[in-house]
Length: 91
Picture 1 (cartoon, rainbow, N blue to C red):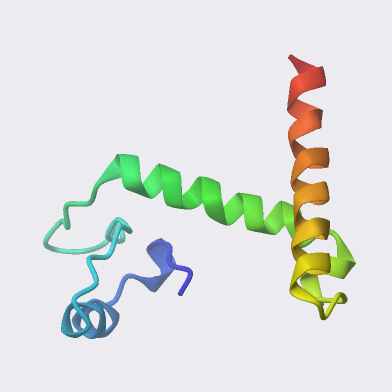
Picture 2 (picture 1 turned 90 degrees about the horizontal axis):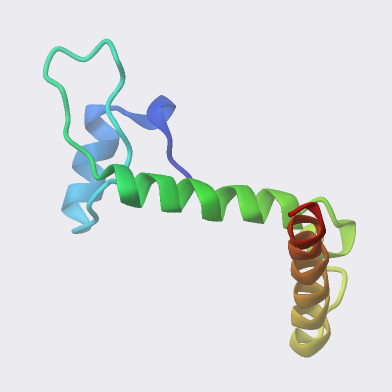
């Protein structure tokens, strides 16, 4: 379940607590009682979410065009390598 400050609600936090899930999102700025969160984990979660967003630019990955798992993961590896190479050559 993707989550950001927009998903900060007591009902959602209660649901996560019932499932023994520790939310890593900060509370909204208009909360009366501020909620502590782990900033390091929040940054890592955001980085992973952005990576999935970049991978889904490829239509074949977003729609799971390849039905065979090895073909699909091969395409994911190629897309990831292509994305990574942009940073290597930029540096």
